[in-house]
Image (tube, rainbow, N blue to C red):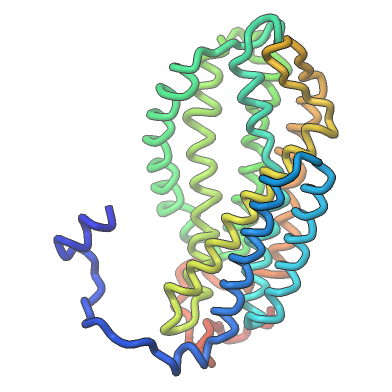
Amino acid sequence: QAVFTSFFGLLPEVKLAVSKLDVDLLTKHGNMFIMGTFMGCLSVVLAVTQLMTENMYVEFGVTLGVALVLSVSMFIFMERRLAKATLFLFLTNTVSVSFGSAMQYWFTVDETCNPGGPHFDYLFFTVYTSVIAQVFNFVGIWLFNVYLSKFRMRSALIVSALISSVASLGDFAMVMRWNLRWGIPDRWFYLIGDTILEPIVIMMAFMPSTVLISKMCPKNMEATTFAILASFSNLGGALSSSFGVFAMEAAGIKTDVENGQCDFSNLPWLIVVCGMCLPLIAVPLTFVLIPDIDMSDNLKEENGLPDVGGDTV
């Protein structure tokens, strides 16, 4: 995609000649480069720890330590408003603890491991549904442009947190087998909920964060700042997966398919806590960390950082 658009000149940017290292820019925004390097080093520490040890408590300690150190370092190396927005993205992605692997097992294991479960085959679960989901990702983008893009930033992020929480109701209903009581077969219920509605919800929740990142980029540092903020958001998602492993262990979820030792009895509670309650932490954080700006505001540049008159966040 990048090669095609660059080769045929489809990018709107004016192509510049190869230039030397901009020492002045590096000096002016040195803290941003330090922040990016520091985050990369901590990511390596986290990856090495996960590869070198199988002790989940050691992994949990290192994961939690990395999250805390990064949360503090933002306010050391970044401008305050930018640090607050970055912390919001990082925390909201981190606390949305991922338990997708438990759901994947619940959907696909056989009758021995999950009596009365849906028992989806992998062709349906990984191929057909993925193709359909990609189509409805675009529907989510369209709905964002038509409706959410007219909201104020705080309102859009609050709405995205609410719809992310509500979206887990589909998984909860299916695990509780309510869909069968309603006369809806597992495949149809999964197609409607996880394959059609969930991609729309995920994209509508993702887009406000992307707009927020773009508005926080200082002048002449757009690419570097966007990369750092997006990396924090992605790292938060990776940490949420690590915390998800500990959450599944704490809930007693067992997925030993080979020996038939499976236990999904506490999966409904895991969905309620991690899928429905934790995403709502973004609601109070929005009022503390996010500036009260409009989604379509043309922000002024003051001291190289975006600002809005009258905003005291």
